Amino acid sequence: MSTIEGPATTATGPGLSAEELQPRLAEHRGELTGYCYRMLGSAFDAEDAVQETLLRAWRSIGGFQGRSALRSWLYRIATNVCLTMIESRGRRARPVDLSARAWEPVEASLAARRGEEAWLEPMVDDRVLPTVGDPADLAVARESIRLAFVAALQHLPPRQRSVLILRDVLRWKADEVAALLETTTASVNSALQRARATLNERGVDRDEAPMELSAADRALLDRYVDAFESYDMDAFVRLLAEDVTQNMPPFEMWLQGPADVTAWMTGPGKECVGSRLVPVAVNGQPAYAQYRLVGGRHLPWALQVLDVRDGRIRAITSFLDTRLFAHFGLPTELPRAGTA
Image 1 (tube, rainbow, N blue to C red):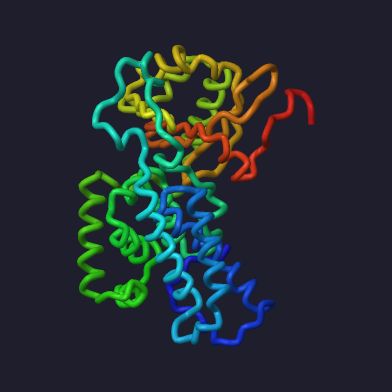
Image 2 (cartoon, rainbow, N blue to C red):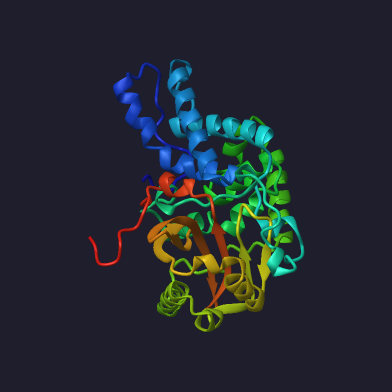
């Protein structure tokens, strides 16, 4: 995957052959996917947006005169694609974003749900994060795909969203963003100020979580897996922060506090007994693919994304959209214990 950099790359003039153009476009797929994911909050929508961006670029390369870098030109197309998609599809959210109060009672938590298009979706790291680059830029990239940050972005007006991502995540200069959006530098600076203020109001702190997990955090996660797979609720509850939250799209419910989380696990969630967890790298956070035991087989059930801070589990978001397993290349079934 390409490294993080500003928009100034070698300009590409007209007259590229198909053989020359194809790899040049493919070079930018990863970073464009990351940009579109932050804009749209959906792994599926992001992939669709990038595909549409590259298709439009392919079709219109004859009109590209090389007055700007190929990368800048692709971002202009991607931005227009995303703005159109946002206008037609609306904002995605997490259950915790829809209500200021946790769901009560726990037993009724599965009473309401919405379609997949309503919810923020996770994204696997290797499709959007660079593997090499300046450590500070890598840290920004990682923090800017965390669920809380991507969810907060969805509260921004679309053009403010684009400005904040380009300026604060991708490190573009104000005049470069203004050229891309065909506006003034003053307008870009104003939009950035308003976007930052909105994120501050929503309590988003991108410096809270460390870039790498500590040995203690990794040990905590090992205990989490052991407790979940054995369904040992006494061990499980000891891992949770006092203000822990649990979300489970597509259900509207969200829970808060160890008592309600464990009440859900032993009540509506008791069918998860016997599950197995497989670690995956999702949204720059610890995450697991949960395979639930069904008729003696371990089949896809949920992607669990965890927020780990201060030696405790602060949030558990379980995405029940099993389409994500195939989309991210995860197995459609786990082998039986003791088999290869």
